[in-house]
Each structure stands twice: as structure tokens, then as C-alpha cells.
Length: 68
Image 1 (tube, helix red, strand yellow):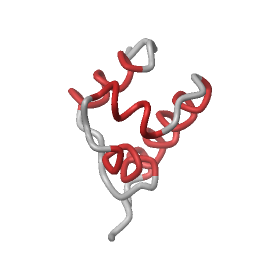
Image 2 (image 1 turned 120 degrees about the horizontal axis):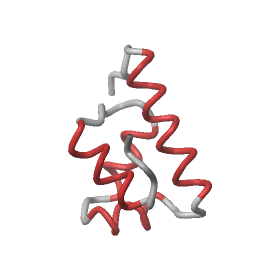
Image 3 (image 1 turned 90 degrees about the vertical axis):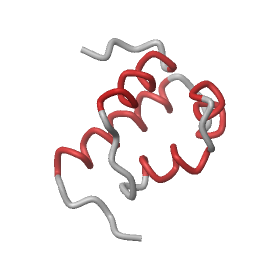
């Protein structure tokens, strides 16, 4: 798969991955909270899928983080 080229997109994915890890959640656990396949979280964190704004907010809420 083609990796994301935008440094901003990569940075967002990295921030989300760190936030998940700080909450001590696995990718599967986060995916379950989002009601999405675990592969979605894996693809985001491995820079193979870009996060849109509604997804970003849903992930932040699932991690009990502030999306602003």
C-alpha cells in the first residue's frame, strides 16, 4: 500500500498512536470503541490511511482526549 506523503497527515497519525498507547489500549480495543475493524486503526497508525475530521473527533472521544 501507498504510504501517506503529507507530513501533517503522518504527524496526526503519530499523535493518535501515542495517545492510544498512553491510554494503554491495543489497536483492537480502540477499534472496538469506534465500532470499526481493527485494520482501520492499524492502517491509520502505519500511515496507510488518512484520518478525516469526523474520524479524528470520534477517536479523540474514544480516547477521552480533547479534540481541540
